[in-house]
Image (tube, rainbow, N blue to C red; front, side):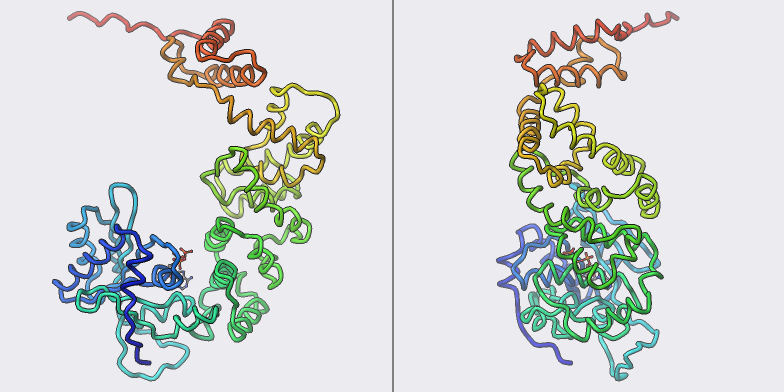
Length: 445
Ligand code: ATP
């Protein structure tokens, strides 16, 4: 089980941004002073070897991880959040970027795979708890060994041959989320779950181990899949392996599959039309999965996965309106742009990719495009602050005035900024919008 003595510093320098290299270098220096060994582990090492960018720094310290995190934070200018119980910490930088630091310690429970009781480094213990060989490599950071690859489980070879392989036979029983992770990495890197690992997955599915997972953990992994660049093949694979039925027992995969398979293209087209990627990257796919169900079922699914009110509303609005929007956009009569816009706006913007996949009629697609592009182009310049500056009291009329000026722009009724301001003022006056009270006189003492 000796590690091969390869140094990947040149790959790190090529792949990692300067900021990350600096963090890794400083981590090594701080550890050296404390007489600890420190390693970067997991996804970062995997991606360096694949020459793929990765900004997630996970450090494993053989020593006191919390002390190490504090000292490193002082050097780098970040603050520290610690979890004493687990010996873990995060170094959080002013811009929100963060680095995880964990303490590698010898675990005392018996490993099921009955390893020979030779002395093992605590790093090895830490790596052995991980999901797949390709994610269980480390790179040493101490100055004397910076860049040295630590690869106890032949992760590098598996990367080369493209194999997703667990570290031991009870891996999926221990943590069923790894089934979803196996699918995610396999499809993301165009690799293959190797035969023995595949047998273990099938066995775990047969034994219904996924049913034991908390919905929270399930959702975490599902969301990661829906945020991937191309979830389609992952969802296919989930269905093929019988995992889909645990996540969406209410939904028949084959009913939504055609829509899902058109999503990547729809997303690309919409970006070209000026549609901006939503902050919740998973939501367009989630809507595509749920659009065919009833409001009640969709609501139950949202509850189960603990979605917020706002997100749930977007799901329900999509289900409530996509059919009617489809019908009206495909209707033969001429409709002014502002009316088309109103139809499209019955849907949340996260549903636009789904909506585009549903449009079949050429004329409807052309109209949708017109709305997308003109909404983008005709975005008014006036905003809430302008209205405030006019002396109107903030309230619900703000939103309505801004919507109205947008419609007016779409129909070419206003063009310049001056016209927009005049339009908004007239709108608010017509609706008796309250004015901001002048400051009351200060009481005299
Ligand atoms: P990504 O590129 O998607 O972020 P990642 O490998 O960095 O991939 P994370 O979920 O951030 O994924 O996990 C970081 C590391 O933690 C992994 O590389 C793996 O070593 C370990 N890990 C994460 N989840 C598990 C799990 N369920 N079981 C075992 N190890 C895990």
